[in-house]
Each structure stands twice: as structure tokens, then as C-alpha cells.
Image 1: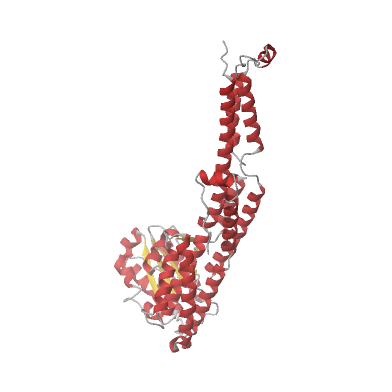
Image 2: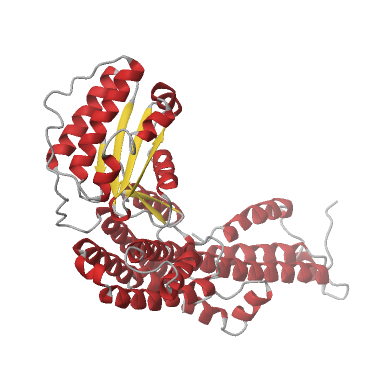
Length: 181
Length: 273
């Protein structure tokens, strides 16, 4: 004999199915979008790598600077500290953004000091190394990866801030992507 | 779509001509001598390449030489060890690394090479057994490598008993500082190209993704509607409903099959692409 569900229970099951579809669809859609943005940050040659290479350039410039400036020079130390944060695997994106700005300022200050140092003025090799390193630093900061990440993160955050579906996604635990600024 | 993206990522990874390790850029191996700093002359490069070939033919030892500008924050020994691993060099290999911009150098070697030559002996070649360190610091790279190769060969002969004829190789190198014309790094340029490619690639991928609908796919909604329809058709008629409606809801007898097919169809919900 065929069993039949009461009509109310059937409607309830139908509603649960639709609700599941909505919730799962919203959650998986947002999760996938977030993963796309995160891949711009963490994948090979993504933003984290770009920042690590800027940190590496900071470390390289420190080697050149120490041939002409004191090891205890404040700007050299600032540059070294900022570079270390950029190369760290544990620093959050906000910390890296601050370190990147600090690196930029320290590199400018160290470059200015180097230009004044008599030994640097006599070293054609180190002048060329300074040019090489600052050019690489500038290329890295101007790379499309930085702008691509910020654009994608901003778009995702705007999408997440949209009423109803965005609110639902946030309720389900989807969080905003941090901007690199 | 996911397969296509994975394939593109794999392709990108394969064509990138360098490897990177936690923010440290390492050159790809280009034969026995890899001069990313572009500080070695053509003759010394050719001589070193020829000597490395003779060495591997006559003995169980391999010699590899790498020149870079900088070490990206690592010390020379750590960089050499990582490069050795990165290049997947064997137990019989000796890698001499020189960072021209840092005036530093180091040797990394496999277990068999260390046993054959003596680890301390091989490391001493950079300091006491040749004029290598002084010449490197004076940026006389060709002369430094010539001295090193001669000293290395003497060590090989002493330790292994094998004689490698070096006639015609490593003639008198001029003791002048390298006049480096190009202070660029091919490694860094390749890196920038790869970063730009990645940025563009991601941009395209992102734009493509943006054009797709979010949430449930059309297939997902259809499956859901079918499920809802099956559930409602399964339901028992209301007590006060007319007889006619009761008959209409009696179903065709295929409800269990409908449930199974419907639930199998849920898979569509999980695959957006």
C-alpha cells in the first residue's frame, strides 16, 4: 500500500528544499567569489608574492646601503624592519600594507643618504645597484596584481553589502575581503 | 570552466622560467654555469662549462656554478642550500654560488661529493686554497673563477686520483674588475613579466567569472521545482477536499523513482560550472 504525506508536511518539505537551495546557492556563490579574490592575494605571483619580492629588494638595498652607511642608521633599520614584515609568512595584509608604506619611505630616505655619501658617489657599481633596486621596487608596486586585487576585493565587498542576499551570505559566515591600502 | 582555468594555471606555472620560495627569487639552471648577474666573460663561461663536462665524464663529481646579484635577504649558505635543492642536484654535485652584489659566496654539495672531496676541503677552496675570495671582493670574477677551477681540479686529483687535462682551459685571466654593462637581472625581468601575466590572467578570469550568475544555476532551480512538484504530488488529500482532487493527486505510481531521480539531480546544485 502506498503511503502518503499530509499536505502540510509536503508543503513544509518543499519549503525546506527551496530554502536549502537559496541558502546553499547564496553561500556557495559568495564563497566561490571570495575564493577568486583570495587567489589574487595568495596564489603564485599574487599580491603576497609581489610584496615579498619588494621586501627582498629592501633587504638587497640594505646590503648596498651598509657599504656606505652605519649599520645603526635609523632609516636603514626602518627599511630592514619593513622588509622583514613584507617577507614574513604570518603578517596580515593590513600589517603588510603599513610595512609597504614604511618601506617606500625608508627607501627614499636611504637613497637620499646614499647620494650624499662620498664612498657611494665613487662607487659606480653601487649607484647602478641602487638604480636597479629602486626600478624593481617601482615596477613591483605598479604591477597590475596590486590594482587587480583591490578592484576585485572592492567589488566583492560591494556585492556582500547588497541587501538580502548579501546579508544572508554574511549571516552564513562569509566575510569581507580586506583591501590593500 | 574549472578544468580550463586549472589548465591555464598549470600552463602558466610551466612557462614561468624561475622558481620562487617564500619571497626569495632563484634562477632557473642554464647548464653548468648559470650567470644571472651577467658578470662572467664568454671565455671563462665556456671554459667552466667544458671543465664541468670533463669532470663529470672522468669522475663521479659534478660542478655547477651560479652567479646572482643578490640573495633576497638570505645568507649565502642558506641560499646555496635552497638553490641546490631547487635545482634538484644529485648526491655527486658541488654547487658554487656567488652573489656579486653582496660580495658573498658559498658552496653546497651532495653527500657523495662531500665524501669524495672532503666537505671542509671543498669549502676551503673559496678561502685559503685559492685567491678566489679576494678576487670576488675585487669584482674580478673571471680571474676568481679561473683560480677556483684550478684549485678545484687539484683537489679532485688529490682526493680521487683522477687526472683531468685542463690544457687550453683557464688561460691567464685579466686581473681587472668586471666592467658590467648590464645591471639588470634576467631573473627579475622574468619575474616581473610573470607577475604582469598573472595580473592580466586573473583580471580576465575575474571578468569572466563576473559575467556568470551567482547563486543557483538554471539547472538547480529546475531540479528544485521538480522536487517540489514531486513532494506535493505525494501528499495525502485534504479531508474536506472534493473527490475529484483526491483522484488527481493519486500519482502515477512512480513517486519513489521520482524521489530518487530528484535527489540525484541535486548534484546539479553543487556544480555551478
